[in-house]
Amino acid sequence: MKIKLTQRYSTYLPGTVIECEDEQAQRLIRDGIAERDAQRDLFVETASVEPAAERADVTPKKRGRPPRAIPQPNDTDASGG
Image 1: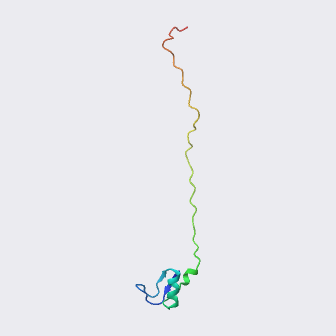
Image 2: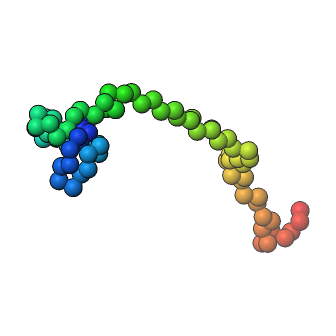
Image 3: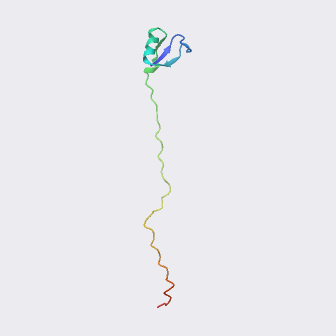
């Protein structure tokens, strides 16, 4: 729970807003050392920006079946006909 100190407490000066466990906060409020922080009830709205979508400018190479091996002439068959 967030509380605002109205008196000096430990090393904290009056007017300091601190967050502590509920039990300790209730005790400090009951003893008159602190009061509930009014700021904790406010709703804070934040804006967010959507990231710009990236797009590829280069068309990827198409991959298909590899070309067949070109048959090489056989050196042993030199008869020509």
